[in-house]
Length: 339
Image (cartoon, rainbow, N blue to C red; front, side):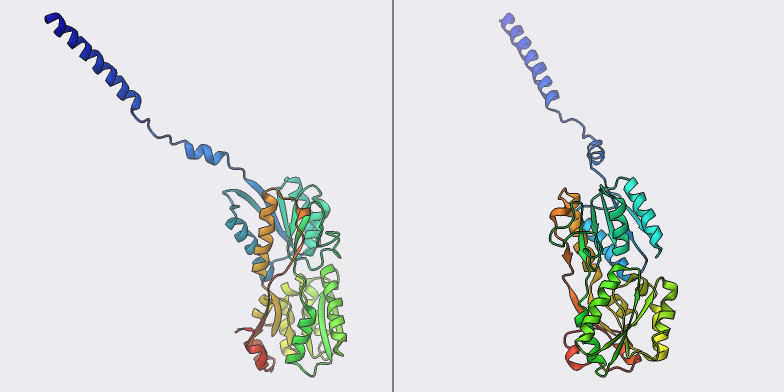
């Protein structure tokens, strides 16, 4: 009996030891604090460069649209993307230097805003994917052979403006117009393309075009002064040189009572009378969407060049009053009226 009891005690002790060991194995281990750090270290940071020819509201709106769209699609600066932004400050020679610098840095993608910046990047960064923004005529600028089938490494968005609608809009504000002044940069391909479009549209309405060509921002005011006494209105194309120096042009036009019309809505907000304008922020979002596709591995050459999807009639009530113009009733119902 005593032997049996001792055996039972021994068996019970062995069982308790085994049970204790089982509990130790089942105990949860302390949570690791290195998991997130290890995961973060494996995230690939893509290198993206954005460059634009000059600083002005329309181009800045494009850039913001691009970065906002990229962030919305998971490419956030300092998190999953290293963003490098450089501005040429209106100097064409700077566009080449910037393009060379970005090419040497082995970017995963370069996004040049405007024709001069795009031309420099395409010429210098031969092996880097490029998604350009706000290039009026990519074919004439020799960036792509066609819009439907762009170059292997290049695609983007075009901001071609409906110049026939711009000219028609001016005739509604100034029905008696005979001569229309156009100030443009003679060195920008996109400006030459738009000038031809304006001339064709004006010819159909019996309007003569008076041209004032300039080569830099310092000549814009002089160009405006050369049109005083010769024209009934002035139309500004989508021209970076002219738009960036708009205030100099506007001061001359105001003094001479020559109404100024624009080709983008941002310039209307700065004092032009009206435009069938492009929403450049939306164009930036459109460009950013293409850029995200390329960063995910899609070939630029497989993505057709996209034209602007949104054109809106924008009228400045203040500018119309300043130039003694009446806003046509039929336009009020369909326009965005800004002060």
